[in-house]
Amino acid sequence: MMEPLMCPYCGGAELIEEEESVLETEDEYWVIYHWRCTDCGEGFDKVTAQPLDQAFEDSDDEGPLWS
Ligand SMILES: [Zn+2]
Image 1 (cartoon, rainbow, N blue to C red):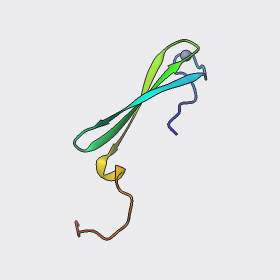
Image 2: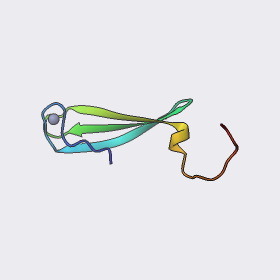
Image 3: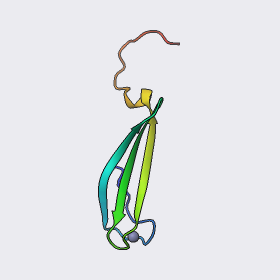
Image 4: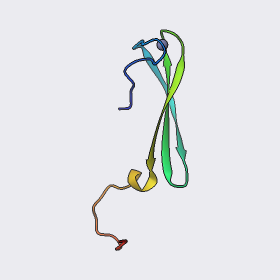
């Protein structure tokens, strides 16, 4: 889903996805995707971060009245 379309170095489209890293901070959830280009051999990362409360928000159930 986060797949880049081409290598940022040479523009090649033959990319290998390596195992991603997951990092959880106090209030954010990070996923770091690692890619390697088979054309030029360069590797690069793509980082996505989202707030923890958003990452786990999956219902509209009535909860405590926060506001
Ligand atoms: Zn490349």
